[in-house]
Image (cartoon, rainbow, N blue to C red; front, side, top):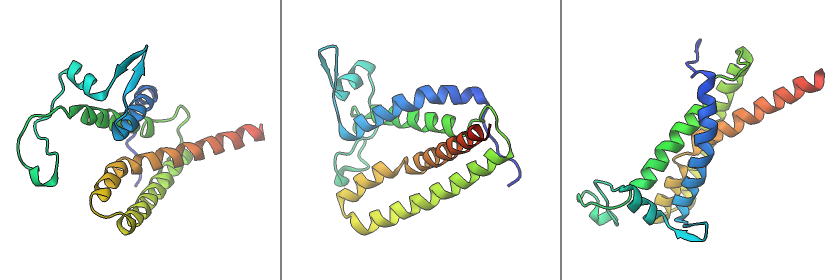
Length: 167
């Protein structure tokens, strides 16, 4: 692979704003946490109602999948999309000092993230059964990009620290 198609550096700044916000909201959606903001109890259902978010298909069990009934479950979808966009903006935007070495680090981090994701999936296949596996897979949707971000930025920080120590 000769050329990496990276986003401009300014996209990284947007990702640095969108990613942490969507990460917190993603955890709140996964754990179904309500927010206590300024002494007001705000739940995710309240936010859904205020925004008028509803999905076209909602099955509350595996037997009802495929039935088209309206429900108010579009907030997790919006949060998922924000998380994906924010993580891609953060992970695949050029660094301010991007060069061939950082491109090599990026590729190594991507390969390592895929290997780690495969290992997590194998462990999940062995240890999780039934409905627990569905919850496990819901949590694993974002694992590859999270692993990539962790491996890439940890290595970039180590390289920059080493360069700083040399000076």
